[in-house]
Image (cartoon, rainbow, N blue to C red; front, side, top):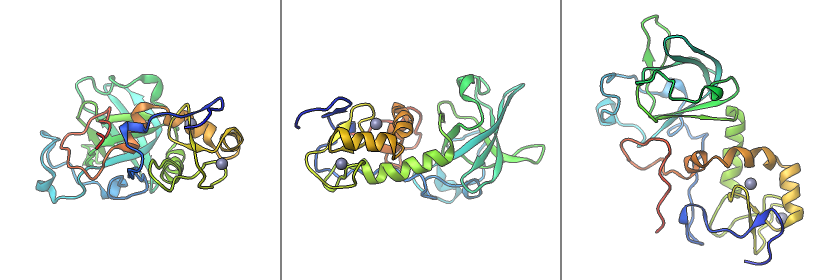
Amino acid sequence: MSSVPSGVAATEGVGGNRAGRQLQLADLRNDDHFPAFDDLSPNFYAGDPDASDDEIGGGPANWCFLAEILDAENFTRVRLVVRDKEGAKVVLAFYTEDRGNELKRSLLRPGNTVAVLRARSHQFLDSSVGVRQEKENAVKIITATLTELLRLSDSVRIYSKDAAGKVCHGCDEEKKPLLRCAKCAMFWYCGRDCQMTGWNEKGHKRDCKIIRDNDLRSFFLFNWTSSQAKPRFPLPAPTAG
Ligand SMILES: [Zn+2]
Ligand SMILES: [Zn+2]
């Protein structure tokens, strides 16, 4: 790659992807892999949360429930009131060994988004509905609103391509060579001017901060159509080849 303006760097491909290899990044608007609460399967197997999904009628290989935190309480266990992408308000209650105390308390606040791998719907004894979370390391709190995340997903899919057809996030042109943002390594720029445009005018200042979280980056890179039975955070980086 050519000279490197400050803040833009020529870096290796994310996750070891070779140039020319098309990377399929997660689309958080996809309802199969990122379903709203109404589309979650019921939790028939409370005692065995990793029971085969064939037993409950198939469905996508992997899925993750995304919802924004509206309220958080922690009396006998962490209990969150969350709102999903369709606006449904549900309860997410932690029945993990540490009753949700394994999560960083400062992250449990309104405006952050919770991601629950292979979540199932559950009806609680008080007849409220939600997700009864029993699996360890299947929950991640993302420091962004759900709206911010969905918007980031849209731009990641346009601008974070590794293969041919990648465009500059600043000017939307397909020029060569393009250089990666040195901070997140997910967005491409022709140079300093376009980087400034992307940073100041096209929201990358905020997006870059969100996506610098390695766990979230692997979230976008994870192959959600894979049949990996027990995905856990941190999600595995894709293998090259
Ligand atoms: Zn440009
Ligand atoms: Zn960046």
